Length: 614
Image 1 (cartoon, rainbow, N blue to C red):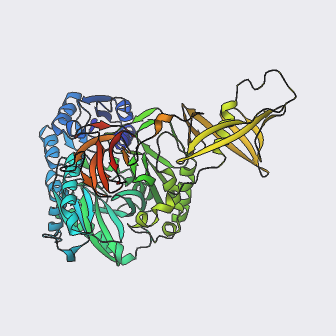
Image 2 (cartoon, rainbow, N blue to C red; image 1 turned 45 degrees about the vertical axis):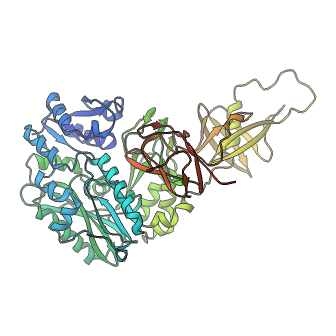
Image 3 (cartoon, rainbow, N blue to C red; image 1 turned 180 degrees about the vertical axis):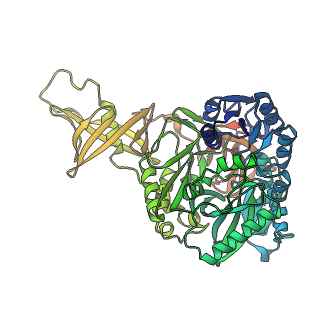
């Protein structure tokens, strides 16, 4: 029997595994980097062990340090979570060699499937060799890991070399393995997967299908179970292929076999030899705890011959600290408040007041809804996200709500190109036009409004706010009857709540201020100074860091005085395990280069200036 479990991971997956351990009476051990010293997973575990450093390569990817931590803390088992070392056969062997229980498949199964190239060969699907123009478009893909890292779509042969270099660098940073391969890229299709669970007695359960077609940068955003609208014959074929893959490597534990379904046919993508981020939707539909089942299998218990029956529909949305309207740029800062309405499941690694840093994936939480039908589950999740209190950096929350309500998605006609087609409409600004007025009125509460009375009308008061990238100016006036604003009757105002009568309808605005950052219901504003700073002017062609990160590469031969073409990559920033290109905004001359490789930058840092010809 397992008595103490170390989770070789961080964030929401570590917290989620700890919850199951608490239910089962298993003590828990966390590992944490210096950057995660105060992280939620380190706080909620019974014991926490420090991994010195901040970068994944120095901490969570150091299997030797994790095994030492497990032994030092008295753990008798290790769960890898997902990402990091979860599909590393060498780490699994090191855990077993230390006399610990490994919560996962045998190392040999990981070796056979963790490399996507070897997995394809095992199932008779070979990657491309030499790529020609007739093969385009193609997908460059990391052989190890997942989560969309180390992946590039290539549509022109002259882009292949840069795509291979970028994918190798990103894969090496995220997984410690820079191997990549090339395969045909199917422009449209549905990403469908099968959850499997296998024991050491020869039983393999196919636990339903999941649809994960809504993706950005090849990383899933919204997942659901079961995959809607698949013919029974196709579902049986997917089950058979998934069970065949599991049996081919004598699989044990939880795993996922992934396919791209196009023209009614399944195309094998890979087998993930670990728990998936989206496992909660399967848990909701089948009424099981997959982590608990993993632990029981590792203890040698046999699964029943048949899995439990499926009931209803579940959908999960990944809440990211990122800006979808600006190339999905990751965001950092303080998460002041995260509160989700009752009735949905919240898996998160953050609590109010936690800092979102630059070193790890920007996912804040997963929100999951379960209902008797798909339509009810989508409505329930959209409603919950729409009413979630979320104060802090920019997130993809509005995108999620709009996606869940989009006709193409609600009618199950989506594919992996959903965001390529609809991103502009899904990210179009739609701020509440009364939010600036509510912020201004709340700001007046508690101030002395009147001195000596005069029989003269008071002058209008003015405040300025930045909202959805645009400046807004509001006007209000103090009178004997109280505060007034043109066209709006003010019903109530205090520092936290403003009620306005708008065309006979009372609307409530909850106002929360964090310095110059103000949240009015779900609208974020920044209070602007009364008089703009004349120093804020930037030279035309200035390139500013869109996110915090590290400069990992400067274009070869680039120096002040270089002639560059519009769209040419100049710099590469790495943030939250993803690399982002900084390109020339115009054709011209590089007149300033402010950064070097290895330099860390903050949002708004001046990186370079490209001067257009006069």
